[in-house]
Image: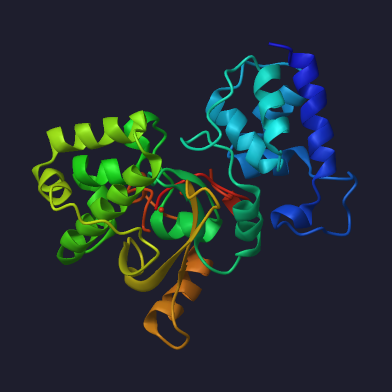
Length: 305
């Protein structure tokens, strides 16, 4: 691992990013051309001390998840992301999917502008890549796991805690939607090993999934009406929308409510409450509320759906 070169590269990329590029206020007393170190740490979900050590050419080797979070926070393009992984002596992750996937620039640019509504970018397997603070407050941050459990769909059929995000009477509807969506993704990806492994595992562990899979219903989820159980505000009724990347492997997902409705009023309250007093149990729910490093206190976050 080339720590000195990694430090120089991180600083050069930090100097290039303007606060407005990532939804942060400029402020009158800014003494650096780009982001401050603590702002990069905040955007990447890291401690300021840890990031400072990296820029000083010290510290432990960053994990693939940490590098992916830094690539998003610093708005690196694909070549820059690959270079970052090379300097840290980590294998470059697949560009198209997985929790370390590089977020499509167009989706990330749109997410930066969605500051007044919950929004996040997920993969087509419902793995949360990045989310804004309101999404973290609404559906929680994703658990720090990798592999199949990073998918909210996988957790939906294998972990009862994931279902607390929705009222029990809505569970059957969401199960049907998730399975039909996964059927469409499986068809689009062809003989993709990741999808095949997920389907095989879910068929083994969930009779409900197996029965729904055998119906062969196919439908990508583009929009849906959701009732989300919030630990403070109670049930919030919202519309969930999806915008797909060009290759279909990533989605920008955001929540809205018609003006004047209870849902709209509760979204307003959510912006005040934020993530304060959110218990880990209440927010280890999942990635696809349609699904979450957090844009903590103003920057992108990775989390739930």
